Image (tube, rainbow, N blue to C red):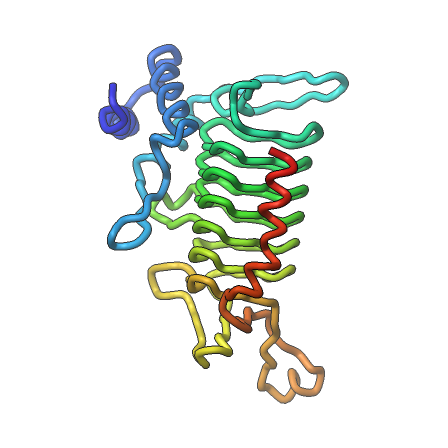
Length: 282
């Protein structure tokens, strides 16, 4: 069956009462996870109206969890237990992917594009989409359903948050050619537009305020969406002071993001190191 028929079958199966059929439903889930891994299905797609969530894909992932039975995996002295439907993916020498030995894992139902390098330790969760030419550095997380564009560098210790429920919630989206600095945290459906640069330690959530020094504006999340970082913005971690007497007495402030500039030729020269790095490791 084609992808549209597959999603309709999953939606129908979720509405039916009674126990799941291990053999029949298991085959359905295998086709679904394979389509996710090949990039044929995605939890979110960019359209003329912006990024849109495909709730049916998230429902399929939830069905995979529901159908799965606990299975023990032994690796030397180590033992792992997870649902049998969503165990780690297996790659071979024909896949144009590098996963460095150690504690790196890519869960079933996630797409890893050509030329992607995944350092150890790191983790890519179900439903995530990592496009071609990306680097996932050590101690990094790409959460469930997160969407990562082409040639993105996710530096060491960075956390790209995930979301499965509610099914209509927009995941974290990182567009093409973005540089995510070390120990950054991006959560709650934030959208990082193409060619943006996040300095080390930047944390962005739906409630984070970002102060654009260039345009002298304040960026906040909309009522129905996450925080949106403009294209080519260079964002560093900042602090905004609180106004109460107690806060002033103790010098208290809240985390914020500060756009100090927009990406230019000088910024691009600094980030060319990423291209040299990929050439040496691919």
